[in-house]
Structures are given as structure tokens and as C-alpha cells.
Length: 336
Image (tube, rainbow, N blue to C red; front, top):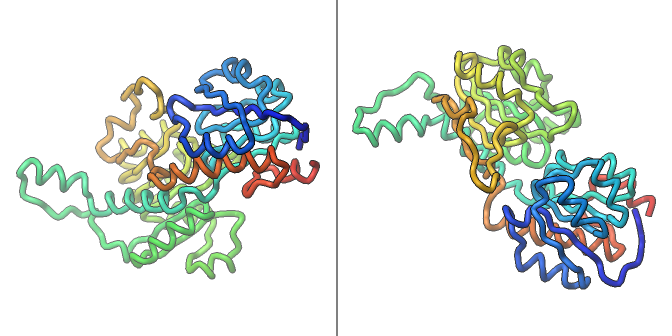
């Protein structure tokens, strides 16, 4: 990690229009007399121009590409105000001696709750029955309505959120299967779940939740081949990353009833945070068997508050010569 002394640190806060800075962030950064530059960071050029002399970057949803990082010679820390770091070139940051931090536990409860909310909404057919009552129809019992205690839940990615979802699902009596190369069968057994291979989780899950990080290995891990391995009655729930799925394949699978339903909070082809809104011509919008929410799974007043405070504290820690609580590339710290 670079260790250059500086009487006045410069901090760039990206996504300052779509996710404005909080008073708590400003207060924490003021403890090191930081000069803060607020930008959105829509383009590489905007970031380079504003951040040439920056010691720290705080980022919510913008991209930080390697070509940009190579030009930021004073940069010491990138603080991600969230969990995923797939939009940051961590490899290049590490080469440049830049610490990358994130907040892996800032919204565990929120995402787990939202994942279960999507699952329950589909399980109890809430969209259908709300339409029934609002249009004055006599309710009919539909064949997809099953008690959860006879259903299998598959979880791909058994980290903090995966474990929190499993805990909630088990309280409904569901059998929980997990696929995660980092989890041992013994660890799974301690959590009261079953570790299985990918093929098994696809074939046996009635509800399949994607909760793994986006990496080169997991990008588009669910394509038509995998969808065809699933039960025709199954439901896919994605609160992880949109790019985990080939969205064209999923739309076709839903349209042709290869699988029954999907509940989705994250998207590869829809920028729900676009300042001026977004087009609704994505294939998902025309499907009756898709439940969509706008990347809000991590949202709550508490998670918003915590992310701002903890993200700012990571900057203060690193610029003050301390180790941050969560570091993506700890080898940089060892080399300090």
C-alpha cells in the first residue's frame, strides 16, 4: 500500500448525484480534514479528470476500470459502499498498491428478507390473487400453490446472505440444498443444509436462489442448458447479480414455460439507477410469469445509514495508517 504523507487528503465521492453524500459521511471525513470532490463518474474521462490527485475514492455503483486506475498515481484506497466489487478492477488496483474495501455485511438481513419476500410472493401467488380481488373475480385454487414445507430450496452461494436465507427458509420447513465450492459437507451439515453439486441443485430445487458474487467463473452460469435441467415447475430467484444469468435465455425459458416463474431484483440489461429513467422494452417486462423489483433488496434506512458510515470509516482508517475492517486485497496491506 502506498504510504505518502499528506497534510490535506483528497477524497472523491462517486455517484454523488444518484446516491448523494450524507452528513455522516462528511462528518467522518472531516476528522482527517479531507477535501471532498463529488462527481457522478459516468465516464472514465470524468473520473480521471476529477481524481488525478485523489488519495481515496468512495464508490457506490460506478465502474473503475484498470485504464483509469493506472492514471491515479496518488490513490491509496477504493472504498466500495456496498458488497460487490465486480465493477472495480481489483487486480489492477492491487498491482498499483491500492487497498480495495467493501461492506460484506451491511445489508445481509435486508437481502435475505427480500429474497424470501420474492419467494413467498411467488409461492402464494400474490400477484395473481391481488388481481383477482381488484377485478371482482371469484378466487380459484391454482395447481402451483403448495405448502413450503414440501418444497426444496436451492441456494447457489452460501456466504453471509445465503446462510441467512437458509435460516429463514428452514423456519418454513423447507429442505435446503446448497452449491458452493468453498463450503465443506461438514460445514453444510452444521448449518442444517445439504451440500450438492450444481447438476443436483438444478434438478431438485423447487425454488433456486442465486446469491453468489459475480466473477469470471459465475458470469452467465445460468444459461439455457442449465434452465433445461431445472424442473418445469421451478422458480428462479435472483438477488445476487444480473450477470449471473443469460437474460435472453431466461426470457425464452419463461416464455416457453421451460421453468414456471422467475423473481428478479438485479439485471444485466436494465440500469434501474439511470438518472432519467430507463426503457421498459426488456423482454422481462412482457412476461406475466416474472416478478420484478428494481435492485432494492439491500435497501433500508438502516443499511443506507451503515453503508455511508462504514464506507467513510474505511477511508479514514487507511489514510490514517490503520488496517480497514474489510479488505478485498489484503496482500496490499502486507506490503505496506
